[in-house]
Image (cartoon, rainbow, N blue to C red; front, side, top):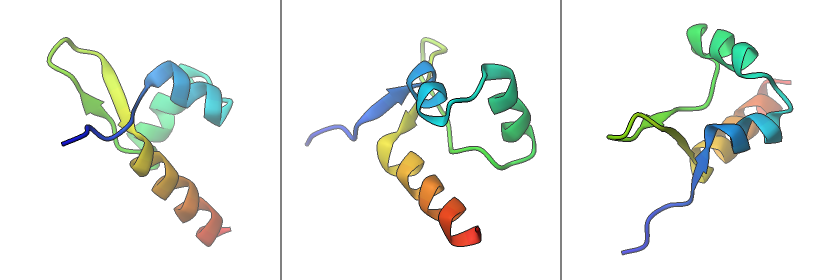
Length: 61
């Protein structure tokens, strides 16, 4: 079974054109895409979760 595409936080920040601090403020408000914390402490976002987050933003606009 193939693993879903996982993006590093830096890749997500580049796509969003957002600073890490701004992303964490958005996350604190519950408005950020879902993060997955790996056992080594690194953060990842599933491509499908980020795409769904974009769709939700478009629907709310």
